[in-house]
Image (cartoon, rainbow, N blue to C red; front, side, top):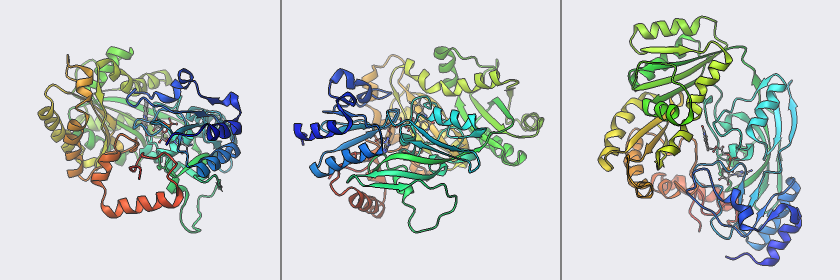
Length: 466
Ligand SMILES: Cc1cc2nc3c(=O)[nH]c(=O)nc-3n(C[C@H](O)[C@H](O)[C@H](O)COP(=O)(O)OP(=O)(O)OC[C@H]3O[C@@H](n4cnc5c(N)ncnc54)[C@H](O)[C@@H]3O)c2cc1C
């Protein structure tokens, strides 16, 4: 439905002309996402200053049946934040305030548009840790992190975004404001409404502020980059480190040699290990006794599950090791088309997944390169595929779902998930319909129908539009 000029003008009046964008060139930053897979279009981008303005915009949208797409940092990888035509884009990028850092209660309260890195820095300035850590942290914003229930590098120790949130403020589809900004660690007073909005990808309400959990800053880190002979050796190593460290392991990343090779070739990082290895692990302990990492590695080498390793001796060396991992996604862009599978299986099934998915991909499209890396500590792999050398990029991307189905067939057989942390958005919507049980889909549709009676919030994302 085309939005009338009168409706657009009523919405512009809420934020003021200076904070409304109608020019296509100016809109580009909001319409193009990181991988340029879903070019968007919209009649209007609105940049409200506060919750009150968001509420007034939603009241107009509800009255007129105008579709709204919420966007925070525009780093989502499933196209959820991109409008597809007549939807108005509502950006949180002016709502960036840190409302309160409460060191005594170990909480931070922020507006939905606050950049994740700024939350981490504000916590650090108060001697606290906000442990959500993802490679896009310099751009993504808390509203988007919560709406996508972001995961990242430290889920193993601290949980997903959902586990880090104590309270929310949400503007509902009809413009009403729910103030649930509580700092409580215990609150069993009926249904847990905040968890409906977390992970809902902007389809149920607009997150305008949140109370987040803080933790003590670790006093020391031990970070190691290790060569391992196989995924099974990596799983065995994880188990060994967990048991010997009293569960002080806060990160455990598996990386295939191809991934390290791409990062070295394109991002200027250095592999600290000189002898070749098919697989690597980047792992980190927090607040472990000083010699513990070395002791564990000696044991692991004696068992043959680690063949070589480098332990960071300074903060600079630690950052250099993390750079290998954090620049990996970006390095893949230089190798042509890439198809990303963000999957999870039980941790113990990761080796079987890798053993079976590789041949399935090869049978589907010979020469496809497997750029496997990810959060093995959570059973979550970014099972990324790079195009065969010399193949046309678009011809490769056209095979997205042939290859995706080949991978997902193995994932589902092993009791896994086709979206571990990136969500559903527009990319996996149809796939999810085939996988979820009728009863699960019915419950999801009922929640959507109750909270968004006119289906104006991010229509066609997560669930098909009516
Ligand atoms: C290099 C790179 C690395 C990444 N690594 C990880 C990783 O390790 N782990 C991980 O989980 N993700 C990762 N991501 C994906 C992405 O960064 C996360 O999903 C992030 O949480 C999205 O935040 P955002 O602010 O950019 O949200 P956006 O992209 O703006 O939006 C994401 C979704 O949330 C909705 N939304 C946004 N703001 C609101 C709001 N205020 N209220 C309601 N709905 C809203 C949107 O409509 C959309 O559906 C990575 C992305 C990149 C580019």
